[in-house]
Length: 228
Ligand SMILES: [Zn+2]
Image (spheres, rainbow, N blue to C red):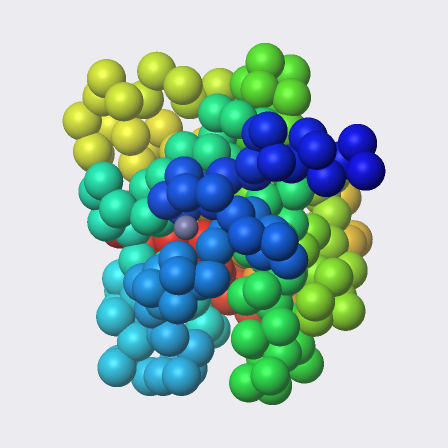
């Protein structure tokens, strides 16, 4: 009864529109669930009709390139990502991962990967923030697809928090030396699904892919919560 009273006084709000959630709704209201800008890139698989796939052409071999949602400034997805980053919504990240993982499973993608790895944060940034939102999304994906995941195998050596000051070319050179595979035996011969929160240029995922392929991973696919 106390919970009901509390919910009446302080109704939980939708993470995408801030409107009050109705009974039975969790994290995202029904209206937003319907209206979120889903990419449906998985329908196109690894073909040229998948625009995200094309972003990696001539850079690094990527088997599948997916994103759950389109990022649009000031829209629902930006609000969702804001909640993920600044309100410590670990649960929301997992929830989104589970939703997308179920969708990918339904389209028979669960058998395409052996291991899920999130793009890591530097340990100082992780300590400051308390968690990595890509971890949460990766964990949700892994749960829904019944696949192993780890946030210990791929690590970030350099804290790149100042990289917003730099030019794009500098940033790429910087990012290339940033990632390291901590346990090479864990990636050798594996088809890996790399997970990040937002894809802009794809340079971060590209750098991670290069590091993993250098240690003997057989195939890299990538997915993000949103794609700019
Ligand atoms: Zn909503």
